[in-house]
Length: 172
Image (cartoon, rainbow, N blue to C red):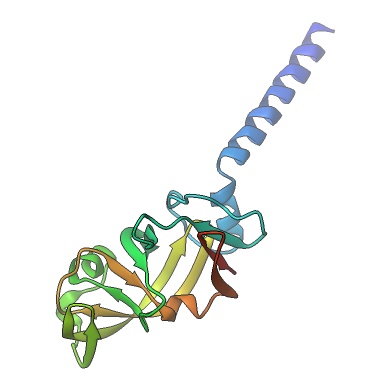
């Protein structure tokens, strides 16, 4: 009888430990099911109560700064609804595994800091929290910048985005 009780106790303990492990790693398991390889979750200030959406609180200047995982590497970005493309600095592109010596700066572009040349690239994946998109068009700017831009080449692929109750909401 004691052997039977010990077996049941071990089985229940293992089931509880498995459930706890799954619960603590549910983001990674969800991503594995959708065929995305995800590193640790990006910091999200607040998740919206609506399914398939995330929301972020802007800073005092009204901008939303966040770490975006580009090709699996955290890159500091600002959401820029006025930017046509995702724009990376050379330093950020190199960190994301883009070979700078293979880039061709063929496109002239205007930025807040003036005109510069840009090289078109395709990003393998771009991830914010549980939101992940593959094959995102982007540019690597020839001039360096402190923060990269998350522009329309990413945002237009969402189901929508809006500012609601002082927060920026992305629906996917």
